[in-house]
Length: 483
Image (cartoon, rainbow, N blue to C red; front, side, top):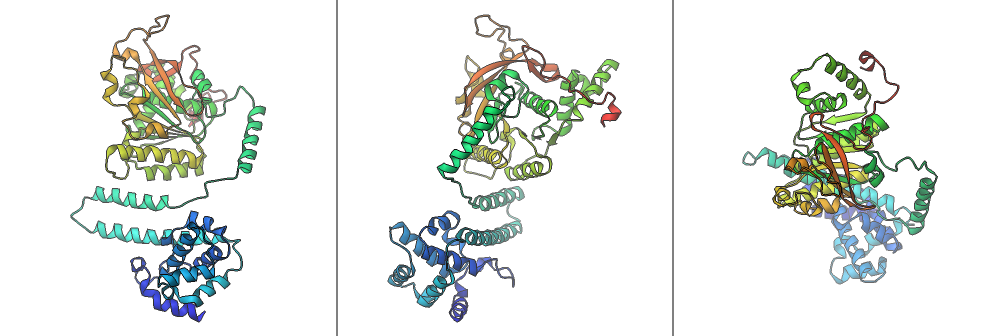
């Protein structure tokens, strides 16, 4: 122990002074660091586990950083890192005394009798490192905030990016053995084979043909609904959210960056009650309208829909809110209206920012194991074509949305462009209809379905049965009982 004390005293000046905070000692665990290094020197199989979780800078003490670097270098060149090879390598570079000499290396080696706890010890080292990074980043943010020459919003963007980078350093074991995967896969196949085949594997959208094509919205999927303005993206998303919550009791989160929560709810009321949006917004309703609205309120009051209309919502905020909603309300589905309005850390180009946003949305879907449906605005290039039908290539200018998405669907209303009939054998009228074009489905077929669209009510319905919005059973008959 005397060797360690003397080494720590002599090398204190070599440790990162950037992490010191007043008289407080930066978070670290020399014992855990030595345990990791010792395990790496007595068991070569422990090295990949440590390298997966840690880097050289993860270690608090400069000498420990040098030892870690030496062990990984020896391993990468096919040599076996042990007390002898590590000592010789450090000696050949004139660094042996810098790490505490042969006595300190021997002490580390003898303090670690087994490598069985390498993962737990590496996790402690990683945790302390992340805390030091937070301290350093907090100081950087604090110093920058005192600088009156910088724009406050720019500083917020920088702070968000720095924190985001720290969060991304939390590495997790990302692989499993084939044996484990095969067992999990067979268990899933067995469950699916014994399930009620009339039930979907995912969260239903409420539209029979679309649900048949997709199997519902699947867990961990990022679904993109893209269209030009005024095609009905928000109306479709609200209809889907309503159907999932009202008809199937699935808790839904709806993040509305474009519209206020009140505007959104008025749309929902109009759609549910079949009362013209304009009449609802202006209060120009008659007694029959009022009765319809009360009935609609009764239905919606039981819907587990959680609306957030935070302006300038950032990806970090969205992730935090989704985590909380998942924890408190077990949400099964998330809608974001719309993707391009999310605030991202400043990047070298807008395309790169959009790519960061879409990748982050996919990460949220995977982390929470729920489908995330994000609306996206298409650019004007769609309308420059004779055939104004949107296609996947229209998304390729928008970062990596297409690559990150598991499902991409487009909303197209030919009626909006003056097209009176579809180009099918029956020349079906386009009036009051919309195409939902599934242009990509990573794990299934693509195709096009048609829905009825009632613009005055901002309401989509199944064409064949006109029953996308059936009233749930067993609700209180009087509104007073519902609220």
